[in-house]
Length: 188
Length: 188
DNA sequence: CCCTTTTCACCTAGGTGGTAAGAT
DNA sequence: ATCTTACCACCTAGGTGAAAAGGG
Figure (cartoon, rainbow over the protein chains, first blue to last red):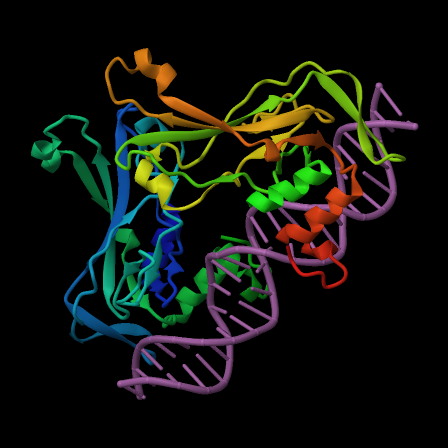
């Protein structure tokens, strides 16, 4: 998914948020190495506001404009990969995909989805947490995890796509949107 | 699913086995209580031959007849519930469903499915294994699990249904077979 | 003759953006 | 004017038994 993320990022990635929760596309995926095969790890993601601004889309110039200060931050939630906890060997066996993660704009959501403000920018973050078996593991908590941010995965949360080129790239590359393709452009 | 299992059992439950693997219907489900909420448990199932016979179905009398000794036993496999291991609290939160379990008659299956001989009778067995955190846990392995057999879940493995009343009950009660219902008999 | 395999239409379940109506 | 919601047709993905073909 790496080059697909970059292609979206060049246009300015947008992710739909809905009341019921919407998956991300592209899906956030990672390939892990260097873990202790026999140790337990928890994998999770969260989303960091990229700035303190609210945006609006200027159709005439096809560009995003800052439009005042950010709305009050949504409840900061975290998404645990559903296979957590699992052994390092299991995580490294194949690409880990966060395809169960859903984004919502519903501040009262009780499905455990990630709550974001529409028209705000976010940076997904990925965390690997070592499950320390030692009795006094709390003392080492600060060194038992590593976090990763991939700049090409940042995006604008929206309730409807603004940039038509984003819409077209989603339709061209997401299998579930095949119904909206017209010609026979080769699949991404 | 309890009363549905019993209704099937009164007719003589049959389960389809295929090369690719077929789910069981009804699905084997359990509700757990009495676990240590904070301890880890592994849940799994296996299948025990009910006798040493091979069967054939006599259509004229609509009954199963013994037809010689059992074929060589298939490789004895086990199906781990995919959420294993998990805390007792997690297992007890809601009904645990083994809907990912698939039955096959392919002796060379490499999808990890349960291998059974068609035209043979089986008893599903359910096991709860306590994950003992003690260093010398092997010494207590014999007391760290409990097994359960529910006689109403026994069945005949088949490659095609033999008893028409079983076929009818499957069609009436399995949502995926709705396409074969004709009248408007109330769903089970 | 008895049993198994393959293919198929018809479902369930749920992920898409379009569209029009609704909200502020 | 701008953004959000609800509903929809159209997909992917995969679970059904029927039916016909295949195998010993």
